[in-house]
Image (cartoon, rainbow, N blue to C red):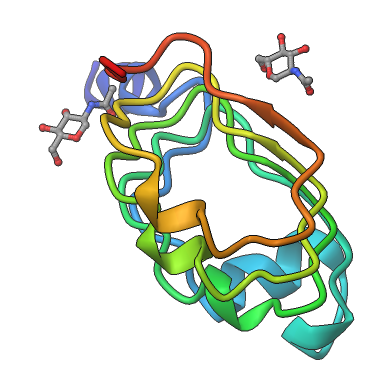
Length: 114
Ligand SMILES: *[C@@H]1O[C@H](CO)[C@@H](O)[C@H](O)[C@H]1NC(C)=O
Ligand SMILES: *[C@@H]1O[C@H](CO)[C@@H](O)[C@H](O)[C@H]1NC(C)=O
């Protein structure tokens, strides 16, 4: 009975609250964060973008369907061209105004009022 109960507690999808170097390296197979050009972190329950700003050469980033409120860690990503942060809890886009290379931005399904 207890074994059965434990089995039901195993979450269907992986949950991650904070982006760490270990997570980034294991997801991409890259040894250096600077080597990561494309990153897809969809629907993981991410709340804190942590050290994502260390991926300074990132060009495409998909963070859709998480629990993100603060985009400040992305402000160092000067080469970022495509960003998808749809379906999060973002209310403000000022922090990514320094992302000079941005060409495509998806912010659908957030809390942005203006
Ligand atoms: C989103 O984050 C808040 C605050 O950390 C937490 O209480 C809530 O459970 C999270 N929701 C999801 C869907 O992960
Ligand atoms: C952004 O992510 C959403 C949800 O995962 C997806 O439906 C949509 O196609 C993506 N949009 C872009 C422009 O990548």
